[in-house]
Structure formats: structure tokens, C-alpha cells
Image (tube, rainbow, N blue to C red; front, side, top):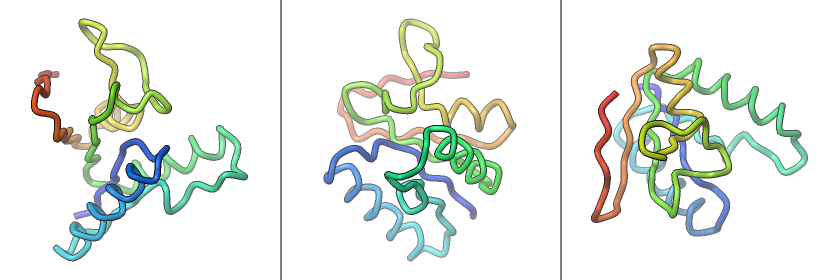
Length: 114
């Protein structure tokens, strides 16, 4: 399956988590688009956006890591009911009929049905 792995990548711990999850998924035979493998510090916001859209268009499913104090405020889209905001990638995937799966390791994860 072609998976776009969305999530925070601002700290070393977040990038390490993303790398490890990507490794596990690839070992299971999946193809994974990991944005941190494509995005460079020299890229503009528009270039990053375009690269992310390219990855989502390529994918069969978006897996969105919703851990952290808020769901990746660096890429958060418009707020959804009750002040919950969701990653741009997840929202874009749903808008383009791409499957989206949200994951969270938090013990008090919130369930939202769309």
C-alpha cells in the first residue's frame, strides 16, 4: 500500500519516531512517503506545500500522527468542531477522497467521526 505518513517533524524525537514507523511499515512491504525525506530547510513554504500535495496525490492512504500538544500546529488546517484542529494532510486527503487514518499514542485520545 502507498502510505503518506503525516505528523510533526520539528524535534529530533519526532523525526526519530517518524523514521522508525516508516522503517516498520516498509519492512511490511508498504511504500511510504515521509515528508521529512523530501523537505529541505532551503525550501520555501510554497515548495513544501507543493511537495506535500504531490505525496498525498501519490498515496492510497494518509496516516496522520495526532500526538503532541496539538495536532502538528505547523501544518494545522482550519479548526473542526469543538476547537479540534487536524493536520493539513488529513484534511486534504479527505477532501480528495483519499483514505485517512489518525493514530495517537496518548492515553486520552479523542475520537472524531467525519
